[in-house]
Structure formats: structure tokens, C-alpha cells
Image (cartoon, rainbow, N blue to C red; front, side):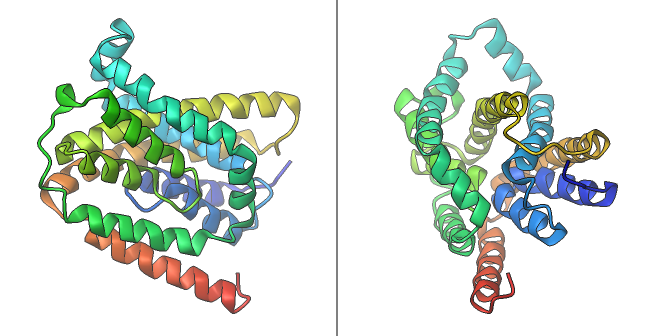
Length: 263
């Protein structure tokens, strides 16, 4: 069993909750946090468990809309979620071993942070041009956004940043772009947790103390709830450029640390 104390669990839960829905890459930040705490062995298992907290957060924020999907699974939103999830699942399952190796080594993480910053900077320039509301999103829009979500499986490429950027490129209103990005995270996170459960029962993952995991999941859910609310408001009223500058700086620090042999 990999040791993780309550303070490490608390910090990692806060990191996951805030960075899953802010466009700065939760997986990239968790990789750095795990490395700092010497929890590299926990790897993908710990990351996926922490994602269950943010899954609870998005379910809490959008419970009314999701209840409508449950009642009418083949309604407009239900169809879009299904269509958008297909390319994500195909990419994730096809390149599962590759993504796990990249996530384990972190060799490209600095460059991925830089790429995320560039995507955010370019997205900010078009965020006021879209007009499509949820009911106007077409199946091809969902395919494009889902494909971008699949590419965001790379550890320091922000899932929310990439899917929001894709939605903005498809002419979707900025508030709707954020909401649909968060909707689309539900089947992606749920699917990852399902695969993790299979690995857990087969004994292919490291086990962690249950009390620490529950604390981390709780903090992840609470911070995720706050981050969703803030991100929707920020996208409607503010700019993404601050996030772009932040991940550019972080990526540069990571690359320098790797070059200097400090990381």
C-alpha cells in the first residue's frame, strides 16, 4: 500500500478540484504534486480516484439538466453527449498504453503546459464571436469537441481548455461552451473510473489508505463545485489570457528543471 497522509491528500484534493475545471490541466498539476510528495507509484490510480470528486461536483452543479438526460436519454443533450464521447473513448482506448507511459514519465509535461497556454491565448481572441446556444449545437460540433477532449488525455493538456477552445471554434456561445465542456467531462470521467475499477479488482494498481482517499475526494468535490461556478462567470465576463501566462510560466519552469536535472 502506498502511504499518503491527510495533508498530502488535502492538498492533492484541492489541486484536482480547482484545476479540473480551470483550463490549466488537473492531470499536469497532479503529476507535479505527486512528484513533490514522492507518490509517483500511485500514478494514474490516484489521479482517477481524485477525478471522482470533480465528477460529483459537476453532477451537483448540473443535476437538473442531467436529470432531463436520464428521463430523455435520446433527447438533444443526451445524443450530443453520446456523440461527443465516442471519439474520446476511441482515442483513449486506442492509445491507452501510450498515454499511461507519458503520464508515468512526465517527459513532455513542460511542452504540454506551453501548448495549453497557446491554445488558451488563441481561444481568448475568439471567445466573443460565438452565438450558438445548447439547442443549436449540432452532432458535428460534438464530434469535434469530443476529438479535442480525446487529445487532452495527455497529462498537461487541459481538458476543459481544449474542449472550450473547440466549442468556441465551432461558433458556440462562450457560456454554453463552458457548460458543454463540463457536461462532456461526465462520461469521460465515469468511463475512466470504470476502467480503474476493473484494474483495481484485478490487482493491477496500487492501493491507498481509504481515509486519505475519502478526504481527497471530498476536497476535490467542494473545490470543483466552486471552480465550475467561477469558470462560467469568468468566461462570460473576463479573459483566459491570465491562465495562458500562468501555464507558460509553469511549463518553462518545468522544462528548465528537467534540463538542469532538478526534476
